[in-house]
Length: 79
Image 1 (cartoon, rainbow, N blue to C red):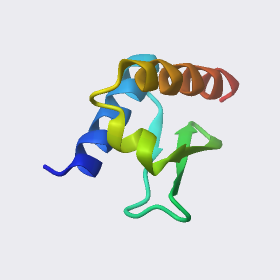
Image 2: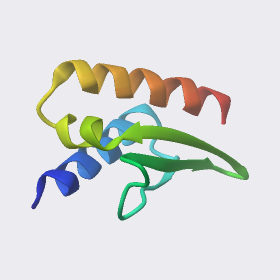
Image 3: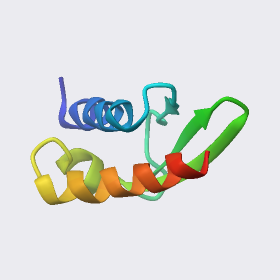
Image 4: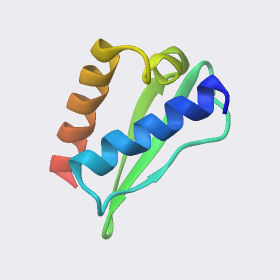
């Protein structure tokens, strides 16, 4: 598994840890080094932007995991 795939899997794990019912769509490739990630719960959908570097470093960097987890919790709370 490459770095990008590991980061995507870790991101999915973070979302599952916040709310198992949220569906996640992560694009295959970034646009301008950013991923526009869709989070959907029921009929509600929100988008968050995660940098390519953050996604790659997510499995190894605890500070990035904390930042992403906080962002995901905030977005899921609005769904």
